Image (tube, rainbow, N blue to C red):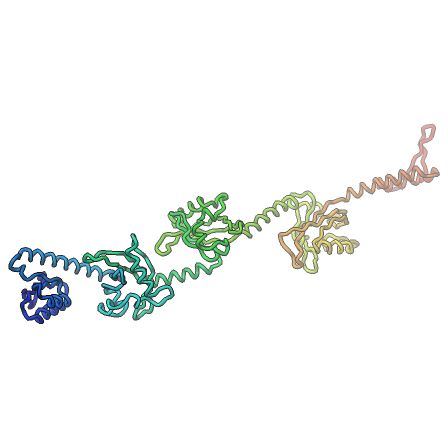
Amino acid sequence: MGDHGDAAPETDCLLVRSGLREDSVVDIVQQWTAERPDTPVVVLAGSAEEELIGDVLSVGTAEWLPRGLAETAPGVLGERLREIVERERAQTSAREIFDNIGGVAILHDPDTGEMLHANETLCELLGQDRAETESMEIGEFTADIPGYDHEWITRVVSSVTEQDEEIEIEWPLQTAADGVRWTEARLRTVHVGGREVVLTTSVDITERRREERKYQQVFDNVNDVITVHDPWKERIVDVNQTMTELTGYNRATLLEMGLGGLSVSDAGSGPGTLYDRQRRVAATGEAQTVEWTIETAAGEQRRLETKLTPATIAGEDRVLALSRDVTARTEYERRLEQERDRRSILFENNPDPVVRVRFEEDDEPIIREINPAFETVFGFAADEVVGASVEEMLVPEDEHADFDRFRRQAASGDRVNATAPRQTASGTREFLFNVIHFDAGRGESGVADAYVWYTDVTERKRREKMVRSLHESTEAVQTAETEQAVYEAVADAITEVLDLTAPACWRATDDGRNCPGRA
């Protein structure tokens, strides 16, 4: 039997030989293991001492060996003691490593889920000593949260031996002080002392989970479309609720579709181009804004203005795409461009005068813009007429009644095409005018703004009047019954057609002389 007094620091093990009183051997083992738990005790006992062997093993003896080895095979005894010391040292080192793991570490029986060993971190988390902790069942400190209970964690532990790879789970623990703490746990099989057990290691992710929940709440409740991308593996890893509502697809479907299934491959917004842009953003750290066209479940194309921003989410490099649906704006811009084209043709480059008016209070057409031809023909500069009413600036006094009728027709949205006198800087002239409505804006009355296109027909009207007068004069000359009537008809024609005053007529005589006629 070894000396059990004050053991030297270099003591490898305590060798106790039976033959003493039985309670003395048990007492020695108990006292030694209490004082030196990391130094093994080996008892030499006879094979007939079954009760003693059971007692010493139960109080901490590392192993027992046949007592006769000391006399019959001391070399074998020495080799066995060396193996026991090395094994115990290895187990002690393993326990030290186990206890120094930063997170929670537990060894489980794979069949029952029983906790075989728990490290100090778990003990501190539960606010109990090691003996109390290891006496608990794992379901006792699993937080009572729907989907997480004793049966669930037992089932997970027992399934580990059936897996080729480790299992990763989120495991809520009920602690003594802080309530529920969420851990990210990895479970795998290991062999300890020749026995297959389940090792669970976990780290506290409570704070990270809280931040992720805040992020998720913002993520799902903003009005903009948000998608999260892995630019290197070219896949969508997350989408927010706004994206599902816009596209009509659920989250799982969108993740499965990826950019390839969702994007319309027009110039600059196909999936290949978008991932090129995303990789550039991830590599440089500089945000970019791109146009992205997608197709919804209903087959509708939507145009998105997308800002690509580098981000780190759950420790992974990602590209965050914040998109705004600009389909309506794009369509408006397209129509506005068409309107600009129309304006260029109908307004700025038109050789005829054109006025843009807006129907304001009491449906009064107010001049908002004039084209260059208006200034030339009417003789009014823009600063003289813009802001004034059409009636005030352009309608002669004796034309107000007709103008009021035209105004009501135009204000109601009807197209107006008519001829009327209009006032210019140089006097009254005759114009053919057309009122053309367009959709670029609406006045208070709800009627669209309008273009008024004027064509000066003064000269045409004068020529038409001249032709009519000429026909009338010719007919008057042909139907005159006396020479004097002919003179008067010719004089009237000269005055009317040629706009001459004091006309005179000469009659040719038979002898070639011209005699004045009487008019």
